[in-house]
Image (cartoon, rainbow, N blue to C red):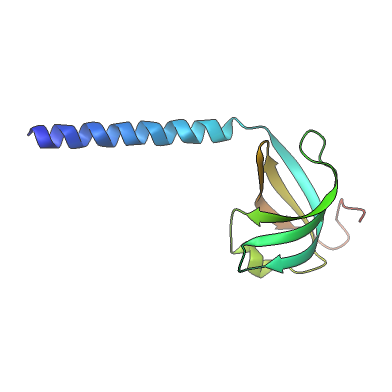
Length: 108
């Protein structure tokens, strides 16, 4: 019986810690990122992007960015214009989407 109570207590503590961690991530300020794909590196799980200026997050620059969803690397091609969500203190691209041709906000 004590074993079961201990297991339940440990499980609840783990769930609370996980919930606390998720709450912290959602409190980070988010930004919309736009850029042009210069390279795709499936092995490294990253995209080389000529990114536009994102005020409050990063100046315009060419850089390798990790992606949160590796399946994106099979969909994105060199030359595509993308948009993504980025978060303060995190240099990964989240929710990457290829912009429709002719509908890009990017001027690069």
